[in-house]
Image 1: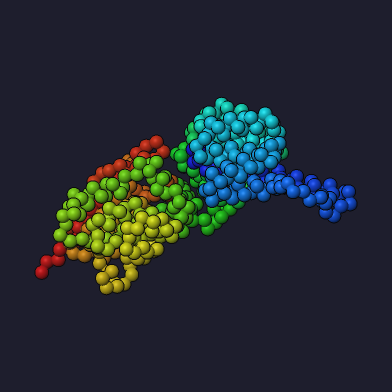
Image 2 (image 1 turned 180 degrees about the horizontal axis):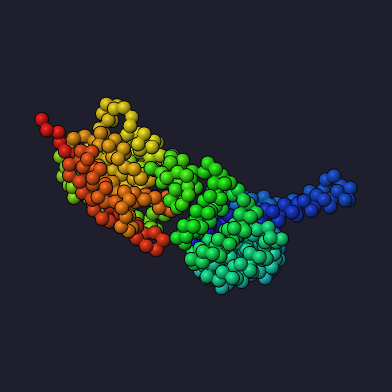
Length: 499
């Protein structure tokens, strides 16, 4: 979709082909071939003149592009002007200048110049494709569509122009038109993966799940071992709430990749004849895969889902512990499953030592950037809490786990280990998803890959382990797939030892 396209973030030019240099190199190669035909090993010598010779257009364009990459846009524009003065009949300097103009905020000037350039060089693909990108950036979609179609008339097999045009059509929910564009690029039933995947995503966004699945199945026919296609197909049937189709896809996925942790974990949520029962927790491999994959865009994705767990946790800490500015002491805090560090800044205000723990190295890399943590550790939570006591690091005044327990079904062992590591008078706070409907099961694994739990069961475990005060409060953790994800925030206190 256009919202995820490179040109929508004002840096789309990074993805454009080096049209100017390619064109100039073609001129140089043509000259080299011509002189060979004439039997010349070198270009004919000319008499020296006092007038300055022209600069090489290829070098000028490369110089301009290098300056753009360094952020020296004014100098780059000066190089373009010099190149245009020396080569008024060459399209490349004007094309590069238009790109720079767009980047510095002179979009209307850039578009005007490209339209004029298109009249002079109607057969230059890059002019029309650039024009379409710029018009799309200004949300002038009708003009952008015309520019992309002109680009395709110049180069009917261009995947870039086809993809840009299809994004535009999908945005306007013109799926049939988008399919027609794809068919002009896809020949002999050999599908271009990104175009087919784009169509599938478009149909899925409109909840036309059958059509989305049909495109992915066509792609899988050509690439039956491609993991990303199984992931996308599983996503379609999961969003469609079709457990039968989802189970079938996951089994095919495991047939092609028997050890795949994602397929194995998700199958446990839907399989009717799966040999293993529902797993007690998500495997380390599954958790690493999920969170390493999304680390780079994790915070943005959660913001789009209106993710509330950190705010809810902070509010409960203020209620139960008080304002950190008025506390008589600060705490040793373990942020269990810290992710990218969303809880780090407010936990820091309550702590004199804050440790972040996560299984995903890429999530920890992002957590470093918030500079809230005194220590970051890559480890699985149960394994870490099981380690032998190591002096002052063996006890915590507070253990916080925002959404980390969503990947555990059986909670008894984990909560017992946490109890053993919490100092007298200390607290355990965590969030969980709760059953969407009444169920007699203590936990359920859902096709999302996350577990939900029953309120009363959590309370029973905590009291049985030895926690004193236990609070379980309903909350909305986030919004997903058009609905609310209901959950609970839990706070349990380890009572002071009696003397």
